Amino acid sequence: MHDRVRQEIATAAKKIVIKVGTRVLTSADGTLNHERIAILGEELHKIMAAGRQVALVSSGAVGAGMSRLELKQRPTDLAKLQAVAAIGQSALIEAYDQTLRHLGCHVAQVLLTADGLDQRASYLNVRNTILSLLEFGAIPVINENDTVSVDELLTTFGDNDRLAALVTNLIGAPLLIILSDVDGLYDGDPDNRESQLLSTVARVDESICSLARDRVSGISQGGMTSKLEAAQLVTRAGENVIIASGHKVGVLDRILAGELEGTLFLAQGKTISPWKRWIGLAVQPRGQLKLDAGACRAIAHEGCSLLAIGIISAKGDFSKGEVVSLIDEHGTEFARGLTNYVRRDIDRIQGKRSEQIPQILGHLPYEEVIHRDNMVVLDNV
Image (cartoon, rainbow, N blue to C red; front, side):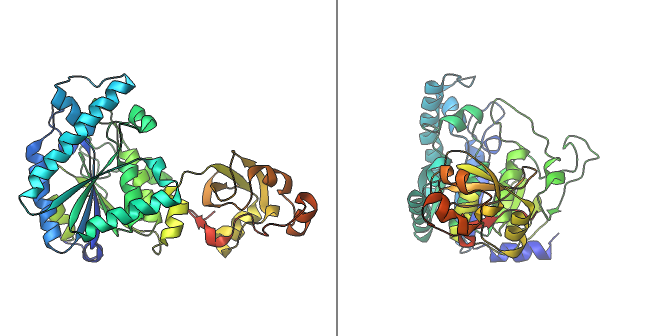
């Protein structure tokens, strides 16, 4: 069954990011499923042959390493875990290369860390590299660099949902497809026969996030919660997301034909600029500013800059030019932006009028603490 909205989204998506989860790529015993990778390769080639560009965010490195080393349990020692990931990376990219090479597709390995996208220069370098690979007709196979990514490796196992969202926003892809071990988002426990699959989600809010039913296994810990967070990141940038089962043969064909497969998360408003994507959706905030109701309203609804008089308090150790989070009086984040002032100066000028700043600091470097051109509103308050 086809859907008009899905058909329009699929037709417009000439550039696509596809994320494949660990459970999709591994067999029941945790070993790499080469047959599934071969099927996935055929589907990717078909998409490329239709004139689209594809970036693949692939989990499974640690699982592939465990498979190659014939390990039955995931190591708990960090150094050993990183070593397993390094061995698994080569096995994973080898499997993709063998599958796609005979189809005439080039495969390129790209290893990233989330904090590597915080710096504007490296962010642009990664963006230009991936876009160049797509122009060459290659498929970038992107994974988190587990051998150096300490925090992520300790807390997750092949969970690249956030990374997939960051890559989608990085290259401005109109569509992110997350292939998981479930058919999509259900209105209840997926194991309950009475639960219904949600075909379309207009907005990822608290009611939608409350539907997440995560389960943890020895192979993967990236559940529905992380997928909803990824969907929120992408839809805020004005792009669309589909979560569907990666175990179904031909699932990508059906999605790109506009069929009712999985759960579609609709874009929120217009596509935002690459500059504001980086500020609001890629960089981890270095601090936090709590604003009064008037400042929140002026920023969220009137497109105003942030002035010192609207700031109630500040948290964090941040410098000029770093991204800070803007929260309302209840502690809810609604925007992010580049601050023109360091933390110690904000502590001195918060709640003051702009004309008072020269008397306090000895000069007036900027009238605005954050200019509206360097700010992204995430949610209206």
